[in-house]
Length: 181
Image (cartoon, rainbow, N blue to C red):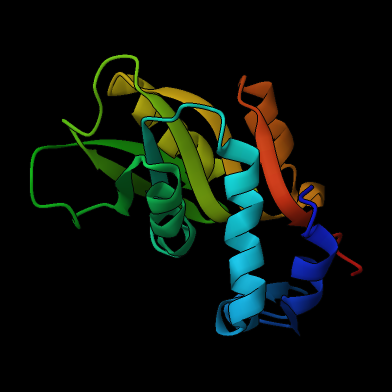
C-alpha cells in the first residue's frame, strides 16, 4: 500500500447496490475531482516507480488512462493504451479473457513495444484480474517485459490480485477494500 493509501481510500466513494444489488461499487470520481487527492495518488505511483527505469506505461481502457498518462509524463516514459477491441486504427494484436458472463477482448498496436522494453501495467481496479492478465499477456506477446502491475484499488476477496501473482507478476495497489467496507 502507498504512503497515502489511507487518505486515498477515504476519498473514494462506495455506492451500494450499483450496478446491481449486492455490489459495492468503488467510485474514483471524488478522487479525481479533489486536486489534492489526485496529486497524492499520482505521487504514490511516482514514488514507487521513479527508480525502476521503465520504458513505457501501458494503461488499460479507460480509467487506467487517467493514471497512466500523468505517470508516464512524470517518469519520462512513453504511454501505451491497451484498448477495448475495435478502438485502435493500426495493425493490432488481441487477447480474449473471461468475464463473469461471457468474454471480452483487449488490443494493443502490434508495434507498441521494442523487444525487452520494461513496462508498467496500470489500471484503476483489480477485481477478478481477467483484464490485467489479458493485458499482461499482450505485452509479453509484443516483446515487452511487465515489470509490475499497478492499480488504485485492489478487491482481494474477488481473487484477482492473487491470480495475477500466481501468473508470476507482482501487484501494487494504492489501497484495498474488503466487501464489508
